[in-house]
Amino acid sequence: MKLIHTPAPRGTRSGRRIATIAALATTVALVATGCAAATPGDDAGSEGDGATEALTIAFLPKQLNNPYTDVVLSGGKAGTDEIGGEYSVVGPLEASASSQVSFINTLTQQGTKVIVIAANDPDAVGPALEEARAAGAKIVAFDSDTNPDYRDVFISQVVSKDVALIQVEQIAEQIGGSGEIAILSATANATNQNEWIKFIEEELASNPDYADITLVAKVYGDDDDAKSFQEAQGLLSAYPNLKGIISPTTVGIAATARYLSTTDYKGKVALVGLGLPNEMREFVKDGTVKEFALWDPAQLGYVAAFAGQALVDGTITGAVGDTFMAGELGEKEVGEGGIVIVGPPTRFNADNIDDYDF
Image (cartoon, rainbow, N blue to C red):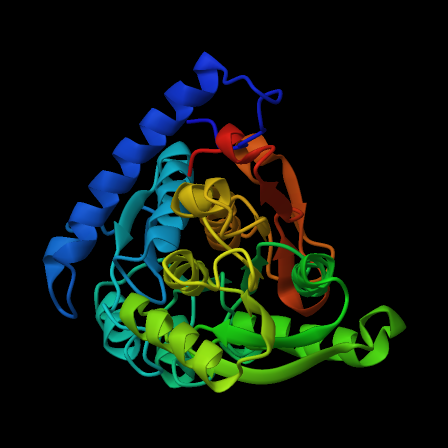
């Protein structure tokens, strides 16, 4: 399975790419089917039963039935398959702070060797992860970090500040460098969201190029489509002079785009953030959205699987400077804070969105 989603030349699509995406879609569908049945203590979500010596790698995302998560998990399964490990996925249907604890406890009882977690809250999962580590599990955080005390490494999509800066650049470009903006985030406790927002606020406050931009509100859609839609609606109602919205969450930006596209705000209020090309394509083509950003989510899960293997076989301990091979993505290095960076963000707009299919 090819994971590097290199865009084809503008205006063309390679057959190889289409074949890749077809394989990806199949994988996602299979994973999603398994996810729906996974509940705490329910063995139906695990593929590793009865293989106590196998390298069991369990993925615990913030929330199941999330299109972004599905793509991330498809990479996790691809990586686990390449390693020869046993893949499973469990998780909550809602991204609440403590909803992941019972799943961690179940994985610990099952003797899972690697738990790959995207934390809804950096500390709420701490005691459960400590118990898992005491039982011998390696903890790989991905997408949204735990408190570093509770994991071995964190697989980060990109340098967090770069994610923030590209969104500030895009909103500034699209509102002409001045005016009121707002942020529509996921959950209030999501580590990744809060770090990006912190850098966004710092950049707005310190960069003279953005002196005429005012951040008037931060709201949270909890990565729920209906709530995100309502929050977007509320922002435009509460701030009639709003010129732009930054939504650094795939659920939030898609819901906001859907709202804008059906109102008089379409084409007048700018929307940027982090979205999936397949979910945002129609809004780019109808003029609701000019440009947004993201990385390749599948690579995140893929690298996480290889990091888990490297921790189990002792290739790495999570120390700065440790290196491991991540399949076709090559060598990865553990940086400060036990963080492994996967790759840079990409801008998506009308010129290139048809070159991507995830």
